[in-house]
Image (tube, rainbow, N blue to C red; front, top):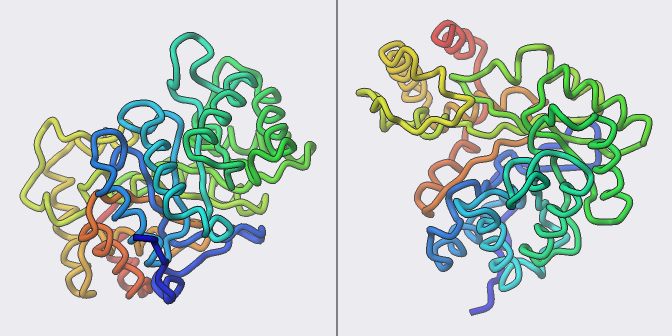
Length: 329
């Protein structure tokens, strides 16, 4: 059956402009980190991805190493794009990243010129694309001079393989440094994608990162908004010692009792608002216009639609924000 997108798809999730750039993203972006790679049936992945688009999520976030097997998440996206989403290419914002381990040998990771070019070529092939909308350097490269990385990204723009560039997991200081090079090159830099949630705020808030981005016509995309599921109602009675937290959230497990107490207090605020804890966590991130979008994953339609309901109530009162801040301190 030929896919036909819902006519009312842009009435579900609000769109947000990235600073004062020409780039516009949905408040919620669909991430393919570990949810829809080679361990999930393609039919299920297709169903969830298309339902996301039907609900106004027109941005799909990927990376060369996503899978679990390297490249398999891009292959899954590519299969669905080729069969269903290709007629809507002009509506879609498709992003990918390179920098973590992608293939054997010393050139299979980080941000040297050969590595970034090879990674993007592979990504375009897997996803059946002529270009991506945003190509990110996935992590800071301590060994390659920053100018080479910036020039490599700029060259991919000039080759028509990407429309914008971004960085991911860069600190405020690192972001400020590469932005200066991008300004000289006139490279369209638009985003830094970092781990950001109620329980992990340091990367986004320390060092004035949000303001540095805004000052340079860029924004922040938050990944891990639910701290691998902790910021849902599933762990109000506790979570196991071996809970699989992302490396950026590992500190959350240092004091489990304190974390669970915070979860319950936040859940009470969510309940008063008629929301789930997950919906409150996402609304809290979107309170700042400099957060251009939240990347979240979903492996089922129920999970997807539950998260999308955050759009029904994105406004937090000053009193609610003060209560939340007291809980999180």
